[in-house]
Length: 110
Image 1 (cartoon, rainbow, N blue to C red):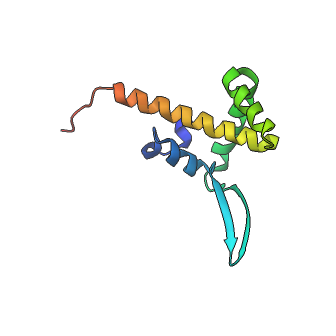
Image 2: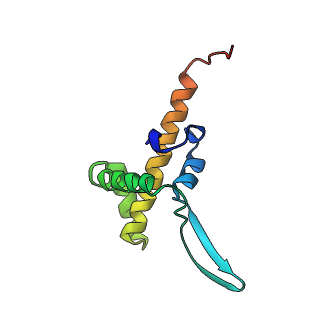
């Protein structure tokens, strides 16, 4: 995942989700407001990897499975729920990176 994200986004969950195109975007033109959809502004390979990770997480991670089924019970479509799981996975990864960087001793720049 780190190879697909620029280093300045490591540990920043919202910025990473925005870069990956996993945030909702509204389409508006004049008075017409269309439904929101994923922005898809980032690299497709990154979204593909996160989507596949979400499929595996829903199958093998009880917490993610519960989250996925909770979204389905609220009326979300399966693909929407899977992409929400992918977003949550990316947030978890960025949180772990942030924790890792917090525990590393700061090295002074010479």
